[in-house]
Length: 112
Image 1 (cartoon, helix red, strand yellow):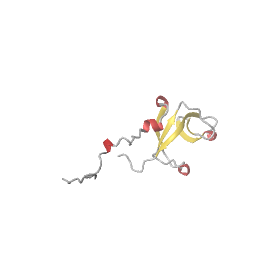
Image 2: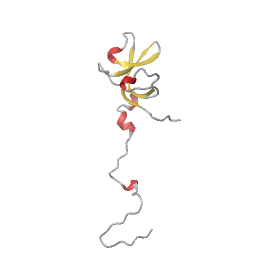
Image 3: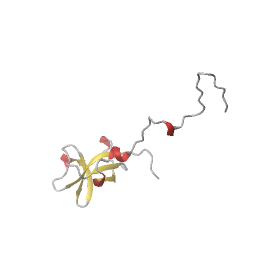
Image 4: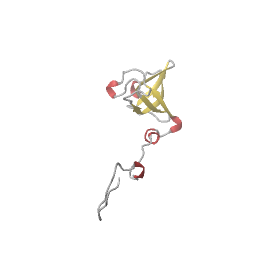
């Protein structure tokens, strides 16, 4: 479209190009969620036992194996060749702590 531009005015047509907006910064999920990439794993949660703290079936737990778990950290642990999740202070004596849950990704729409 052609607009006659009177002196001293600015005419805009359509939406601005987001590529030219230098104030926008991209969000890198690797940088945001993963501090130690070599020791970080993503595990899919099975079951709804943790609904009360916001962890649901099919959520993705970001687990860092290099961290030492604090008393109230949520951890992944192994007992009888099966993974489980709970606060560190609730791990059974015979279980082995596997890693600390640092984040949980909840998807509202399935990826299929």
